[in-house]
Length: 163
Image (cartoon, rainbow, N blue to C red; front, top):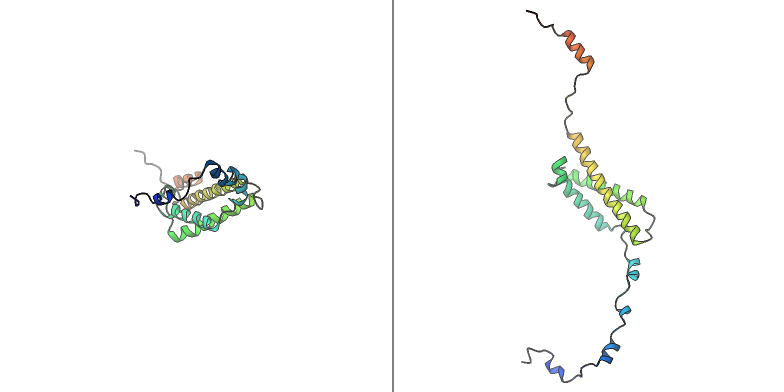
């Protein structure tokens, strides 16, 4: 029975705390949990860490090289080309977002806005890259003869024979 209750032997040796002792031992509610304002200055959302930026590059490589909606619509890139393109897309987006930001965002909300701008830049540049590559890879549409070429070809063609 003593095995079932690990504190069974200790129950008789220590008196149960009274309400007064329990209340005096507990910290006041404000000291128990720091306020949100006290935590915010230590939270920095912009600029993202190098680890986060590397994760963005890896995800862009996957989007460009592996089967995805984008690669199915515009064509997949070979892995080495996708890695170079992803690094360039991320670096350009980071630079654009950094230019729009102040030296250090004054508040968490400012940092979130800059991070959203960075995310939108990555997406926009990724789509532009895919579209440009697809347009360059597509064969040129057959050129329609101009009006001058049409007249020249009809002048050299024999007239239809009348019977």
